[in-house]
Amino acid sequence: MFVDIVMPSGDIISKVFVASSFTKKLFGYMLRNKPQHNAILFEKCNSIHTFLMRFPIDVIFLDKNFRVIKYISKMEKGKAIWPVKNAVYVLESEADRFEKVEEGQVLHKKNADSSQ
Image (cartoon, rainbow, N blue to C red; front, side, top):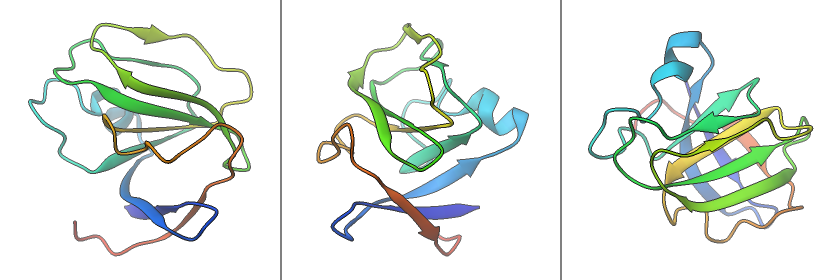
């Protein structure tokens, strides 16, 4: 399933693949030379790692209301972020896709078609 992630201004940041199952969450961007999706939304998630990844990523931790509570730009491979308090979702993308996002903003998600 895909959703659009929308800024408070109404601008669409990205079409996002929703990783809701264990296997989809497990693999994400691991072992890939480039992203297979513009971005991935991990549901029920509050920590991540970049082990076995081959490119830097931007990471956004969101609370239950989709408020940005932590933003990490250009996270390098081989790193881990321990659980982020109040995070319920994690949004990942290749580095620099989320450069307009700021901590404290409330993002929104809306349905998108399945093509990319």
